[in-house]
Image (cartoon, rainbow, N blue to C red):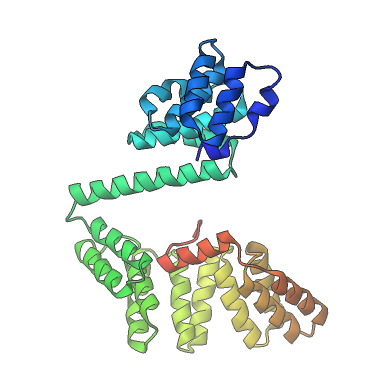
Length: 339
């Protein structure tokens, strides 16, 4: 990974540096690690910090982190930003291999601050957090096997695998152990809804959401879920009431704005629908549902130019990676940030 990200630094050094350094950089870039090490060790004898840095990168790339780490630390703190970036990435890779999560986290945080959109930095960051997640899960199962958190976590994992009935069973176990814990009833209700929308399951999910609201009446996401069930049952006044409550708690809740906007459109309250859906589009400019609903509200209000504009937006709209990830989180029952 480190070698693949190496730019052609040696091209800019060709006129000014010794042949061993240039040859070492060329060999490193080609993936010839034995030759790279040989040339770079020779170049490093002249106390060239760049030779030392790339020698350390070579050692790290071939699994000799213990020898590489001291030089990687120096290179990471050096004045050359590209070498510092590569050294930081190699350092993180080495510390993860040694299970030194805290050391790796300190450097990856610095790299993210400097290179927030860098793919290699984000990749190593993902590896770090996955490793920390796995280590923490292992400790949880080892040290607190009877905790309700073990059942909760098992339920969440089962949800990611699409095993919603099994997930619901784990959430029920967690609730039995700690009926006052927040979000357990919410997650159980979500798992039930993901399994089927039969009348019996809708009623069971509604009961779980109401139990969550009894613990936390200010949960706008749960109110939205209750409204969705009422809509499914054609209990429109009750759905409106819950959506309005959700928006009173969180005025920037795009899903609730869209749901209420659709209802107002059906009621031919076009001005209110347009106002709600304009807010939703502003909050979620890549939401196809928001643009489509606004287009329909404009059309019903006779504002054909505005409707055509929304149609054009809808035609050009493409699913972005972050949009797909948001949908993934919804399937997991995650609440959007700030809700």
